[in-house]
Amino acid sequence: MSWGTELWDQFDNLEKHTQWGIDVLEKYIKFVKERTEIELSYAKQLRNLSKKYQPKKNSKEEEEYRYTSTRAFLATLNEMNDYAGQHEVISENMTSLIIGELTRYVQELKQERKSHFHDGRKAQQHIETCWKQLEASKRRFERDCKEADRAQQYFEKMDADINVTKADVEKARQQAQLRHQMAEDSKAEYSSTLQKFNSEQHDHYYTHIPNIFQKIQEMEERRIVRIGESMKTFADVDRQVIPIIGKCLDEITKAAESVDHKNDSQMVIEAFKSGFEPPGDVDFEDFTQPMKRTVSESSLSNSRGDGKYEPKFGGKSKGKLWPFIKKNKPPPPPPASASPSAVPNGPQSPKQQKEPLSHRFNEFMTSKPKIHCFRSLKRGLSLKLGAGPEDFSNLPPEQRRKKLQQKVDELNKDIQKEMDQRDALTKMKDVYIKNPQMGDAASVDHRLSELEQNIEKLRLEVQKFEGWLADVEGRLPARTEQARRQSGLYEAQNTSAVNSCAQDRESPDGSYTEEQSQETEMKVPATDFDDEFDDEEPLPTIGTCKALYTFEGQNEGTISVAEGEMLYVIEEDKGDGWTRIRRNEDEEGYVPTSYVEVYLDKNAKVI
View 1 (cartoon, helix red, strand yellow):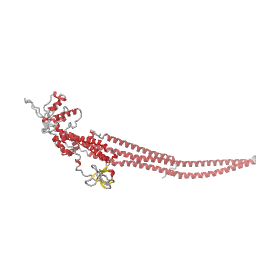
View 2 (view 1 turned 90 degrees about the horizontal axis):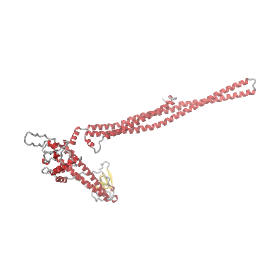
View 3 (view 1 turned 90 degrees about the vertical axis):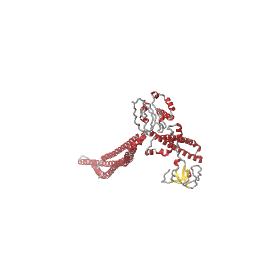
View 4 (view 1 turned 60 degrees about the vertical axis):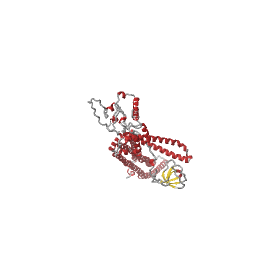
């Protein structure tokens, strides 16, 4: 099956067909290109969708993602982001493996097709030229033959006429002979041209055209194979990302299966638990007695009429209704250790309720629990101004404890950061002292003093918040072991401080004083960061080093080494120019990194 033998006379149709094949290839390239654009657009929309529903940093919405259901949703958003990435991979692979390759192939195909059909037209033009030469030779032979016949007839006519002279007859005879000779020459030329044409025609239809058409056929078959391979690649590109997409979907399924309704319910309790007990029963008031009635301490009338409370620390107290009352909210109840006499009894008259705030302030300051009343007034003022108090006393006990614990943890982190900066600057100062050409050691003194002041301020803040935390911990009922573990960071490091502070803040009669509070704050021990490292295990070795020069370690924390000495590396240079080394179990310290040649173990974990 060959186009050269079967389609020898279909040159024009083959030209149209091969052009159609190139058009199909270009159409397929356009199709794949539009598919890649759709994949990119889809990936972009998925990423925007995932970003749209991501929680905003440092917002209330971010706090809501501590529940298992919302964490599963967050995991779904992250997996959708990876899912979008796989569609971008599809677009990239199709662009490089299909569009790029086929675009180059189409250019090559057009050049090859142009060359083949140029050869075909050239062959056709040659055979047409041969045909024209044959036709010209044939017409010339025909014309010469007719001229020879006419000359012969004229000679015979002149020869038969007796009136014609002999010279005229001879002239006619010579002319007839000349015409006959020209006819013979034209005949020979025509015969030669005919033979040549037949030979050229045979070569044209049995050699040149079949070869050219065979090349065109091979070119077209390669085009068909190439487009088939591209379609296979089109499917393979999708198939390659299916496992990764499957993993993304598996992770979404895993996240969905991790949703724990019991855990979420417990977290709701922890998030909103106030720590108060439900209000007790309302006492019966007998109005049938003629005697003057006494207002019951557990009645709701006082709390609703004058906004005050009378705690009954034996168990039930109407004062604990205050978180649920929308209007005339009284201040929070005093600590459980306070005596019932800490709050004045008796309802207020409307006149008293409308007294200026300054009169209420004077009344509070002249009452027995001065400090507590002053704090209640201060808390009320801060709430009116829309800003919460620093000690979170506007919150229920359990929520207040969590806020205070969170604040203590944040302050401890800030202290650690400041200490890290101080240690780095101290090392830098030591380097400057040893090598003055590297910098002025006095230039870091100002920053070191600032860091020391910041650390001292933060420690005072920690003491203050730990004192408040100890107060709350001392007043809350005993928590479960699970709750203790959840606040383990504070309880593990500050148990002694909490107990001592809670005891010191309480006076023998149950009342609170400012002097005792201040004394307690001084008694609360600051977190001793040095004690945390007393029992730490020695650092593992991460390699060895060789001393290039002798170093006299005269400053604290450094170690002396001799040139050529081999030692163990336990901490790599962190950019401050010092490396921590060990000679034996009792001798370790820092040396300048430029003084040693370090050989780190490949499998060692770098500190």
